[in-house]
Image (cartoon, rainbow, N blue to C red):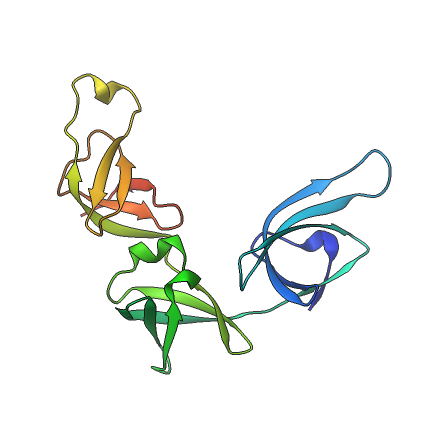
Amino acid sequence: MKIKGNAVRPGNVIEHKGRLWRAAKIQHTQPGKGGAYLQVELKDIRDGTKLNERFRASEDVERVRLDQRAFQYLFRDGEMITFMDNETYDQVSVHQDLIGEPVVFLQDGMNVTIEAFEGDTISVMLPDSVIMQITEADPVVKGQTASSSYKPALLENGTRILVPPHIESGTRVVVNTADGSYVERAKD
């Protein structure tokens, strides 16, 4: 689907120079001389390389439609992770590098979204947040609760995060899967 160069938005997948790219960051620029353009940071879907491009409103860009389907996490076998299609019950195995750093937050039975282009799996997206239990947390230092300082804590999956001083071992918390940051205490 053709779109104008200034209509590219973060998250869009475009075909450019014979490869598939996901727009990571965009910035509208209006120079003193010449026409306005859109500065776009592109990330190659397959190998992760980055490219900065300028697109003008007069240029046409090929936007790619990806197939998005709901899958359920089944199991891990070494570095390969297997998911099941929620509708057809077909199984797909992908390398853990396709998921990236959020792979540590996969939980049994978790529903994920898998994007595919012409039958090839391109990305696996976890939910925005997960609920996990704190297994280890440093004790509160007297007087530290008044400031907005955070302390290190260990999650049940072995990942270290920073949490507010009032969070203790055994507490269930909501964690952002994109960057592994503390969001809030889980509602029981």
